[in-house]
Length: 300
Length: 301
Image (cartoon, rainbow over all chains, first blue to last red; front, side):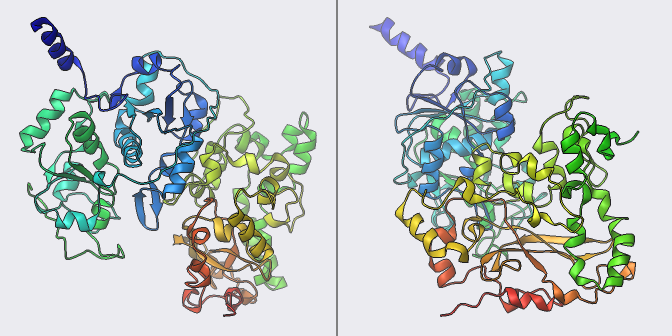
């Protein structure tokens, strides 16, 4: 019995990430290659159509990221309407039991991969993972490349979103006990740099800073789970406290949502879709909103 | 030789047919830049324009055979060099079309202008899937513009009436028919409008979404794009534009950000109650053409 428990413990330690579904939150090229013949596998290649046509993981469907994080008026990266998202997913071959792998260009695009993966989870899909290191890692591993255009027909219809993964401005302003995490760069956090569409420089008062690009190594691969966990712990984040992640327009914040929720297994994490673009401005997005005064040049 | 194919005769020994028609095509002649503005000029002004503006400035934008098939065209002094070494290519839209049309149409098509990508781009289509070689090489007269191209794309060629999948779409198309262009309902987001072009001083641009009467097809509502010619655009060339008010400051346009569903297809009230994005007196450019008023659609209820 002791031996059995030891094996279990060893297996738990070796598992790179928590398996909440039929796929790990990040998979490597070898895993993907070994699963290419799985009829449930759907690979979403998020690169530009021209890059996809030039070569892609065999069987991958081409999906434009901007059909999954869409512009709505002046808002930059919003969740699509359910019928539009259903069309995109069905055209890519997605079914309710699909095992989906999101492929971006490389590790520098991790937040765009997580934005897609977060949206799929938000849309109710259970089995979603991301190719660690993106297509660049697939090529670097010497895996096969195809130029065949894949046309699959799925039947997944988005019926409702999982609102527990989502925060909007009203929710953030009321969530006084939540720990707020800023996923942008230090320059943005401290107010030294500001995107033109964000009305105020700096950060939400009290927010912790965890830049999205800390998740990956300089080579673009996701850091080990223990290192990611340590980053959060040493910052003072409590896994049991409600956590809301924000950024400029709702892309970068999904990177830490993905790590907290899917890799580390935190159960109360929300991504703020509108982020600073909405938080710092009035309802018309034209003027800074006095209800939220960002702070600059200081921690938290 | 700097641009060997500047004279299509260089290519004619092997591609005689195309080289012959291409010399009279809009991409080579840039005749659209002449015909589009000509009604604003008196006969004398037109002569001055042709010599001092068109030949000196506009004509420099013509595309040689090589600009599309060997080396990316030079735009504002910038180009991407040879596309595939010295090999000729049939097409490479992101390095050819995208450069000359990179201010408006192409970034609208890919979504890089900030709106939604065109559904055709989403499905993997690119420029020449709709704009055929016969259109791009078409032989046209010296007074032609892009609307006189006989083989230009038509939505209905791929999406004929009656092929709709839902009754709602069938009814909407039957109800609106020729009264409303496809783009008036299916253009999804803002596109670039340019204002205040002064000769040699450039124009300013901003996102816009304007619906109004089609200046070239009276009785039809369509999407309009602000064009940058203002009253003193050609002042430095000594052209006063005596007939400036003959043309409006908007042309009908097909923004390349087509989507199946938009605010207008989802909600009839967007047009029929709110009249959202419709051109109004308040939306007319200051000091603009008198002809703009003809483009304001008058709702009859």
